Length: 109
Image (cartoon, rainbow, N blue to C red; front, side, top):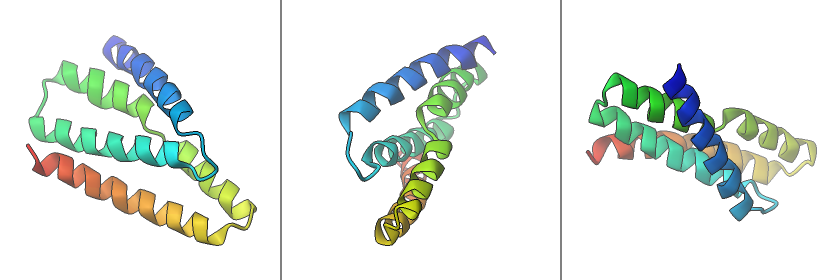
């Protein structure tokens, strides 16, 4: 549990600062964070890390770094603002890119 928490601290801090770099009306920060996190998780999964490294990086760091809740909230904000094209684009591209990047991360090993 300590490893998950330690990784989570650094993942949350990384997500916070990276999110500040991409402040934009379209939720680019969350898109980039979730895409890169999906790639990293696919890569780590393919590497068959030891349990302690998986807990530290896979569960802790990447669990705190990526965020499905923010993705859902930002999607609802776009829908509430009746930005239908952006909402559909964001939802579709996030889901497809997340799966694709996880697969690429897995394959490149």
